[in-house]
View 1 (tube, rainbow, N blue to C red):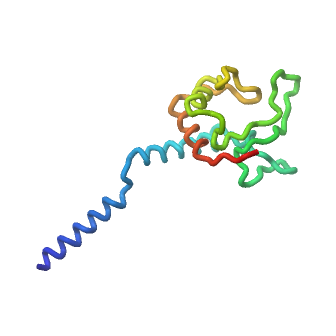
View 2: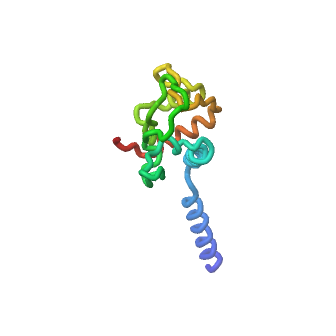
View 3: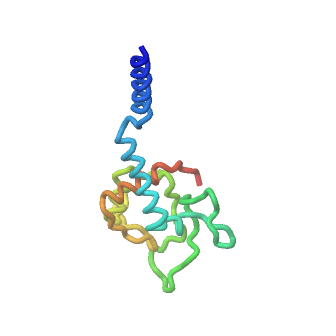
Length: 144
């Protein structure tokens, strides 16, 4: 009888561990992809340097990261099509996933135009572009 009780307890523990383990490797893959995108956005491309508003001291405003903002620098010589502000990219409102990936891979936007300077024409790998788009889409868009 004791042996059966121990077996039942062990069986319950195993079932509990199986139930506790994430059910889908797809969910784990998506989470890892978002983390990779976050790393690329924050540490490599440093998108927040231009795409985040700053206070009067030039410091990023907490909680407004990637919500768009005025650019605090200008070209030394006049440059056609220079953007004076960077758009809100949190949530990628107005962009479908494929167009955003294409933009990051080719530098060409959904309107078939290149990004306005000072935005560089990125030529990322599909994997990196998909990770960045997954991260930006995971952020809740905010009205301007």
